[in-house]
Length: 140
Image (cartoon, rainbow, N blue to C red; front, side):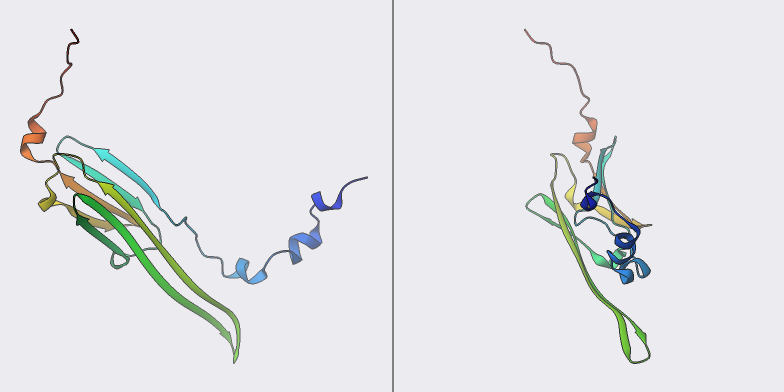
């Protein structure tokens, strides 16, 4: 005998979910968007992937050598059929990510751009840091 709890049926598929969520489905992302950090020859680069957020939704702050990227977005959507509200949604999304800056970053020249849902932050290296070539240290 099969356990009915473990076997989804047509009835469960159709009635077990919220119909309006399927109709008005919106893209979702976790509360902390994905981040890439690169070290390049003359600068560091941070990429924050946050689809659906606009340039104006971001805040980038620098305090005590800690760079903080945050966002807060509030939305209210309402679909009406005559006078009856058939769907109402209050959406609130926020996140905050902090990065301690490595030694050698020129904090006065940090720049940020936003394009296609990706916030890019460029952290230029100080000239003295750029010129330091890496070398192998011999162990005696």
